[in-house]
Amino acid sequence: MGRICSGCHKELSKAKFSSKQWANDKNQRRCKNCTANNIQSVPLPETQNNENEVINAWISAPAKVASQPIVRRAPNDYIDEEYAREKLASFPDEVSCWICLEEKDLSSTSRPLLRDCFAGEALDGRITNVWSSGHMNPGDFAEIWTSCPNCNQSYENDLGLATSAGFMNYIEEKDDVSPDLQMKGMKAWLRVESNMTFLTGLRNACHLDESYIEEGRQISNKILKRLLPKIQKSTLPPQQRKLELEADLHGNDLAFFAEKNGDYEAALAAGKRARELFEILASGAIPLIYEQDYEAKIAFVQDDNDRMKEEMGANKEKGEEEEEEELQKVKLAKSRRLYELAMRDSGEFSATAFLKASIMQSYCTNPLL
Image (cartoon, rainbow, N blue to C red; front, side, top):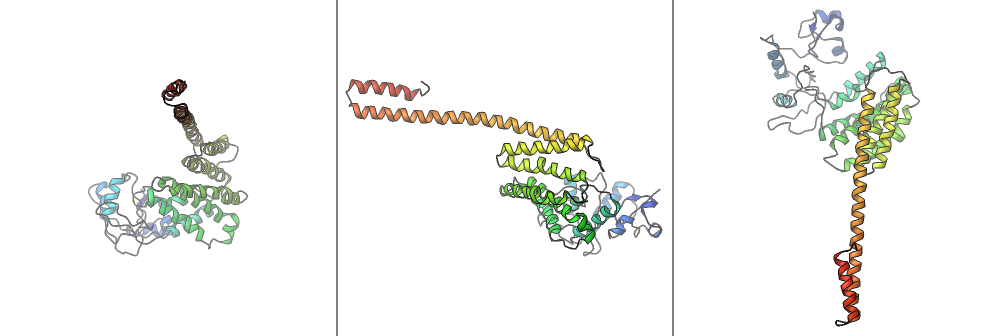
């Protein structure tokens, strides 16, 4: 039987603890991961009658020290967003969050979660783990910035944009990467990952501000022309991730922002390139170091391309109808002008004028003749 870590509050096996931590009191016992990442102990309440009461008491427990970051990893079943917002709103002022969040109410009675920011330190620890273990998960870096550590929900709209921008700015300003990591391309890789994360924030928030569309197009082109080429010959990331990043850039970002800008041809070209790259990944032509369902990604890109082709056809048909309507308007205006000239030049009682006027009036009322 395992024991509860007082940092992440997970029940873990003995192998996950050092011998010293395994012997510690339950309120001071921390697993190897929490110890390595300097995640402090958050004492659990005394055992209640059932598991739900323990969870609720733990979530509601006030923090003891305002300056100490509290990282709460919620149970897997704690995923209901509305319930999470209510719980977060009920926290006292002393509660800390390891990401600087945007100052805005989550509900009418909420307190903004603006406390100590430890996202940078958490990211540094994760970089070290990736480098030392050789294991990587593409979402490891971004989720520190884009997901709430309390309820595991992804930040959305302006809040999602702000936190993803924080990730990008942190990497751009970070100049203390060790020389070994710099040579292996870690900094260049993280620049791509952080810019891609920011693009996701722009995509999700572009309905709030149309200027995000142009900004997204500019950053997409920057990644394609400047950032991706810098990682192609480096050791990091692995080839699988390099192709994946390029495919995601074409399928998710270049296609999206081109379509939003009305350039369906460019959007379809980007989607086609994304499919080609995903097909390479699905074919087994390169070694895969982690699992991904590339067939599903191919199907998604193809569905998106089919949808755009249908919209292009509908838009073309609509455009032809509008063009024909404009042509008929021009013909109608011309016929009316000829009618007026005939009446003016031939005189009121002229038989010729009467004939011309009759013909022109008939044409005016039926321009298809």
